[in-house]
Length: 209
Length: 239
Figure 1 (cartoon, rainbow over the protein chains, first blue to last red):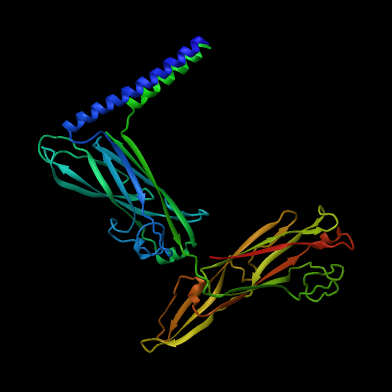
Figure 2 (figure 1 turned 60 degrees about the vertical axis):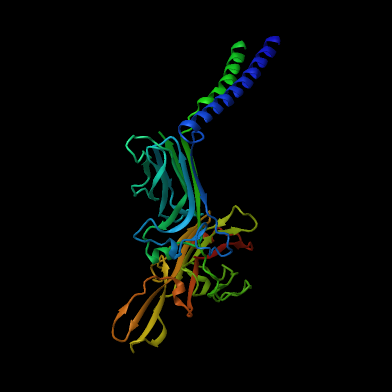
């Protein structure tokens, strides 16, 4: 019994010590990184936020949910357009980063209909020169097809100094558009879709180097 | 026992270290896309009227068939129309009508059943003319529509004969319309979408019949003075 009590005491003390040590190490790293690299700490995150159309008839013109028969989600040759349904943010000090996006087709509740679509993820992050001064930005987009036919399911982004020293900088693309567009379906096909509620799932994997 | 405690302590001690050295370079996020297609607003006509043919509640009535009939006076040894569904609709894309047929069940002993055969059919459907008008070019034009059943149940040989010996069986018929526009300049084309709502202000009317047959050999085992009841469930869905 004494041995068990002693063991538990050691564990508790170790926990306290470890937690304190973690905090101390964390604080020192924080200060060091502020001096040398100009950012607070290492970070790596991806976030996607739906835009909610809270109008009674869903007539806001952007956001979720939307009417699949609406002209704002119908096909256009420029697949970077479409209805704005969400915003997404990526931020990482682990650049270059790899972004993998997977989507499932829209399905009604009875799963009798499967509707494919394109999603366009726009990004825009600041570039820096050798001195760490923001010099320009890098903007682009990833177009993903829900049937996997597109080439945009995976993308690698890096942020190398616009000068010549090869310095790697963090990537921060904040609250950029996610836009939705249907495949090029005929009107008769659209009319054959049953009325009701449709859902689909989008998953983003954000991997640092 | 001591080994167990040691493992326990080791795990607890390693846990905080795991936080220090964890790899934070993978992050995931997900989104559920929500969308809808509006169900057609009920601004059209969709009326159905189901009735027995020669419907009578009297067992003694044997003209036609009705809902009650005496098999000692009339056997249904060939398919006989027993009920009808009258449809009037210009609403939605299609109407799916499902029939669930059962056997005749002895009301004194439910384990005793008499097999029954059913078929659904419709009269041959012809084109109906609608909306005669002069178009912007002075041409005389009109639309015409006809009901379409899937599977085709309008010919005498079509339709699915369903024989129910014990378990209930279900058949479905989808009702839609086919439309064409004709112009006096002999130009014609098919509007093509085939949805009922293209009828606009017009209403298509059709009738579907349900027919029943009981094989001669199956009458022999029926008990006299006992009711036998079969159930037909009809459900209709506008899409």
